[in-house]
Picture 1 (cartoon, rainbow, N blue to C red):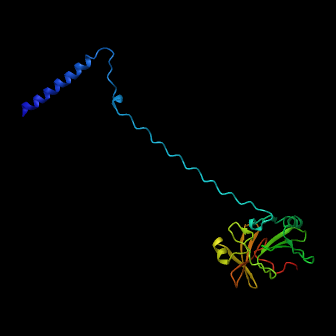
Picture 2: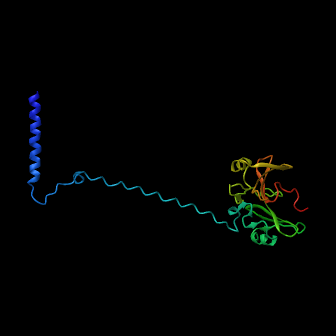
Picture 3: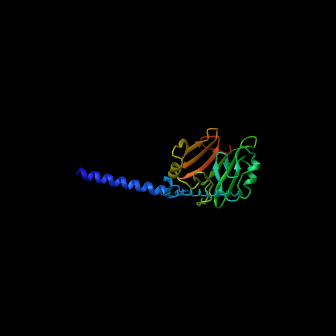
Length: 221
């Protein structure tokens, strides 16, 4: 066994010497390849996927002065009718609706066969301090209120109490008058949006934007 090991070792020495001699006889100018040259090239980097383009947001519907269904009820007013302006200014914006105002009453009342009644409530100086949207007023025979203005959360004069509570989960009941319960939200700066709900039917009977957490029981007094 010992002789076999010597033979193998000797054979290895001969092979190593042969390789060295072969390298020396390659002639001038020969340069053995560098180890880096003998290594397989790295695979090309995998390109990063391009980010998906951001979806284009849907355009906000443009409010039309002649289409109450496109109007938004917010703390500034109802569609083109705004708080804090003279009554004559808001009257001009609602001129396409039927003027149902009474000379003996300071408020301005506008109606339409296809939309709820809109009331402008001025103070003594003629400035509009509240705007009401009523779906059931003065025995109107109109029961189709799909053209109602709506809040940004979709509540209008055709909504129900259940829909109101879903749209505004933290809304508080702010008062009651006769058969109406009042629910209100505020911007914290003295303005409210109040929803009057019929306690018998559960329907939103009217909506007011103004300075109060309730609705006045008398507008012409």
